[in-house]
Image (cartoon, rainbow, N blue to C red; front, top):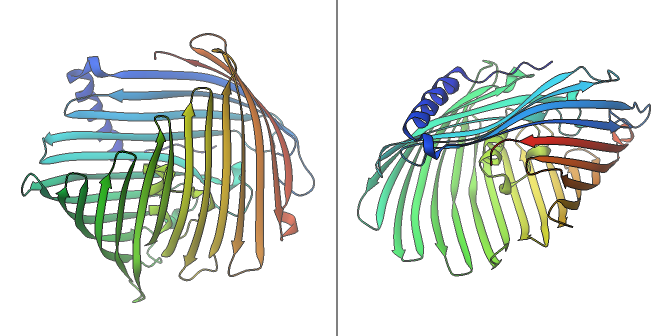
Length: 431
């Protein structure tokens, strides 16, 4: 059973900030606890090509959504703690914690603020193997640091951001590392709707395992951002230089572009294009900050530097008559040493249709193709699911879902079929 541990310094700081928020801004605090229970049947719990094992899984969980503070102290947190009971013992019973919490203190308005984020999730040990409990580990990411602002004029300012990051991997401690970075930004508003500037910085990566080579990176980029009536954009372009303790040096052009077009008041189209020299720990951190910038499920956790290039297109329509989400992601990852480089193409579609005020139904499907460029292996994963949601009362929601998963692979033993049936009952307090 997985133990669940948060960084001690994170707990201390969160507790202190939450106390300040609760006492100073009690009327601004919104707390929404949730409790629930679910039952899930699968005809292939281990996701194997042969010798399928059936399993009945009962899950009990508690969750909380916290939004506290509108003054100098602010805290936003979403957390869920689950306990999974595998009735047929195909896996040992397990606990799972998910947390995304951010605390902010405006110590000196428009001059100095402090920010702490703690992010706990699960990630596969081997990204090419089935996503089962035995191939899953908890990851805890802590980031902490100030933003220091130096206004030059009403149109210009300089920002300094020293930051500390701590990455803890539960199963394989080889990947545990801490990072110290310093970033400096210069921003200039040349027109009412256009900003330009420069950003540069350094980052030191120190692995806990002394046999792993540490590295230090530096970068500089030109940045531009703007907004119009229908669209907004931001981008940067420059270079990154990385030197490892072994003496190896990696450098190249890096940058990104985000363009969002508002089709209507409830629909938009978003384009994200990026290429970066980075590591899998920072990929995980970036995904926690902005999930719209890529899916980390295809990342293989390593201690290496890699070039991560991605194009992601997404359409979102929040029309109350039919909620629609469509996305396409193209990714290339080139690892510097290990034979893990890959090309990934993925796409997904999801629809939600409200039949009545109490009843809604939805369908979602996803396809991904992973091709190892250093090996003759191709994996194709497809899943489709349909669900019905019925609101038994204002606070009580019932959900039923049918799901089918299919994996094709040039490695025969990696293929599998799975059919799942899922029932869930959740009660939400407050709101």
